Amino acid sequence: MKKTLRISVNGKTYEVVAELLDESGAPAAPAAASRPAPVAAAAAAPAAAASAPKAPTAAGGAGDVPSPLAGKVVSIDAPVGTAVKAGQNILTLEAMKMNTAVTAPADGTVKAVHVNPGDAVEEGQLLLTLG
Image (cartoon, rainbow, N blue to C red):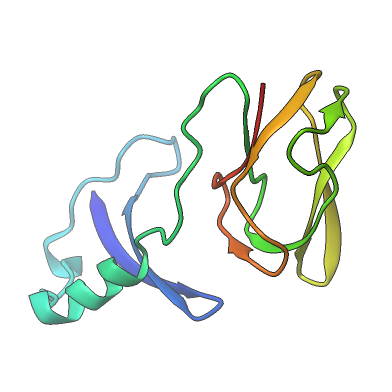
């Protein structure tokens, strides 16, 4: 049985569809008494709009470096034109008052930087492009 749930994380509202499973991991049989009340379309629209990404997500190209988590860009440690080695720190993110180093996945040169220090980023958002 699938249920639509509305959750809020850090002030952002998301609607998610969850499937209820029984103890064996199989989908649970629907129970007539536990059906959720219908949600008005007007109430659902703002939640859907709030969950829409505000920045481009990773395209999945060979040189694309996506954000490993949601957070704030602290510094760009490898500006455009910088030759980097695999594992070298190229950008620093802050999330939950902790800094996370984003490293180059392969040797290359920074071709484009898609964010600026202070920008809020979502998980999977494109940060840099290596060539």
